[in-house]
Amino acid sequence: MFRTIWGIVFFCVASGMAGCLPSPYYQKEHTIPKNAWDNTFRPSFKFDVTDTNARYNLFFLIRHTEAYPYSNIWVWIYTKAPGDSVFQKARIEIPLAEPGGKWMGRGMGAIWEQRMPISNDGDTIMLRKKGTWEIRLEQNMRVNPLPEIMQVGLRIEKKPLADNR
Image (cartoon, rainbow, N blue to C red; front, side, top):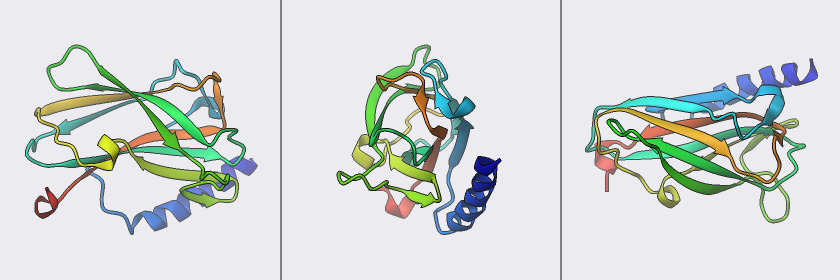
């Protein structure tokens, strides 16, 4: 019950603060069953691309509790372009805390939320094929299941044409 109340409060505050962020081209979050991310649970995200000349920023979203026992998370990112039959696989590290142990991102009570760029050190990328893209996430830590992870997600922001460089 306590987590539910804090989750509702956090959602309301985060929603209010989200008004300050640019509107996403795509955003979706998946709730992690029992707040323990098993490496066999691979959230999938499908989105359509119609503008192949645009540039996009991709972000990994994570919501975890203060009791999360690590300062980072390693994630496999599987990407499948339209018309492809296999996924391309890349492993990235997402820092969640500063070297001194202070959590990064936004926190409310015992819940922390972070949005981390995942595209080429934060650079924009071009999605050069029209159609439906699919991205899957898999936690790749030594501990399985990974405790205290509440949600993970994907956010894609389309850069305005004037910002494309």
